[in-house]
Structures are given as structure tokens and as C-alpha cells.
Length: 120
Image 1 (cartoon, helix red, strand yellow):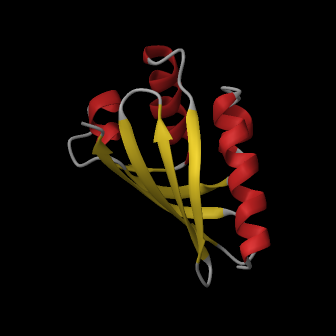
Image 2 (cartoon, rainbow, N blue to C red; image 1 turned 90 degrees about the horizontal axis):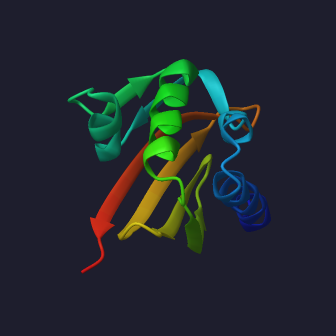
Image 3 (tube, rainbow, N blue to C red; image 1 turned 180 degrees about the vertical axis):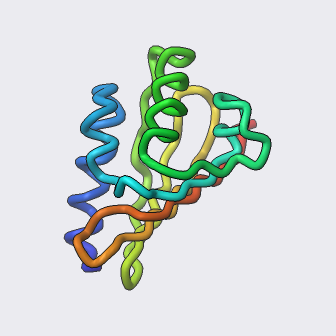
């Protein structure tokens, strides 16, 4: 993954979230995506925070958008890996976030892990 590819993806991903366009966000993910997030437990009741499949993400993120109707992300930095990227961003609900996205050969996210730190 080049820096240019990583930055282009990040810009589109952040815009999709800030527009609250759930279908556009989900378009970045495979049908069998695996994701872990501490907020998954909060919004879905899944105690492990691990979700499997695009439909599980749809439920999680739809619930999050309903509970956080003013959700907004501010991109801080993008880090490119071999077949992954790490997005560092700030939420408007008090967290700094690093989200690591792993891409398959077609350039679609098949695994994701979100990490949060509350802003004091």
C-alpha cells in the first residue's frame, strides 16, 4: 500500500462516516469481515467486542449513528503498511482513535481493529 493509496482511502472513509452514509462505509468491507472494537460491546451487547460479517457491522454502526447523531471524525494521520493502514483520528465524543484496517488482494477490508483512548 502506497502512502497515496492510504491517504486516498482514508479521505474517502472519513467522508463516508462524516456524511453518515452507512452503505458507503460498508462498501469498504468484505461480506465476511471480522472486526473488534470496545464500542461493539457497548452498542451490540456482544461482550467480546468482536463482530463477524458485514450484517453485524451494519447493526453495530446503525446503532452507533442513532445514539451519536452528530458523529464526526477528524483525521489526524494515516500510516501505510504492506496490506494495511492505520488511521489516527479524533471523535467529537471525546476519544482519540487508531483503527487498523487489513486489505485483501482486491483492496477491500477483511479485518479491522479499533482502539480508543479517552481525551482527558
